[in-house]
Amino acid sequence: SGDLTSMRQFGRELAAQVLESLGTPAEGLTAEIVLGHATSVLALCGWGRLKLERWGDMLLAVLDGLPSLDRDNLAAAALLGGLFSSLSKQDVACVPLSEPGRFVVVDPSIAETVWSWSRAGDDAAQIASKVSSKL
Image (tube, rainbow, N blue to C red; front, side):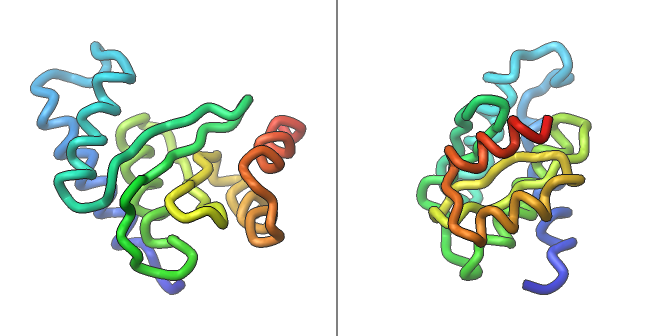
């Protein structure tokens, strides 16, 4: 726990590396190309292999091989939030699930609610159902 602002900023710096590695503005590229570069940058920096999954209206980020930094994976969540916010040019939050390396990508306005569901033991399918009902 504590202030994770520096981890979120680090995620933004990694996004800048992703954008630089593209060699062209991201706006003209597909999401797959941008995310492919993001996956490479995260892996090269030792954060594991990133993949995204869609669960109904919910987006789930998965980091296979995520190093253990804190019990709740809040540092990795902050890093991913900064990365995705910079790449998408839209403020997002990533909320860790109880399953290691799995994070729900959400609007910051519902992050606390999703966190409480996760802490109560809800799995990805249950949270996806609840997120869909809130939209």
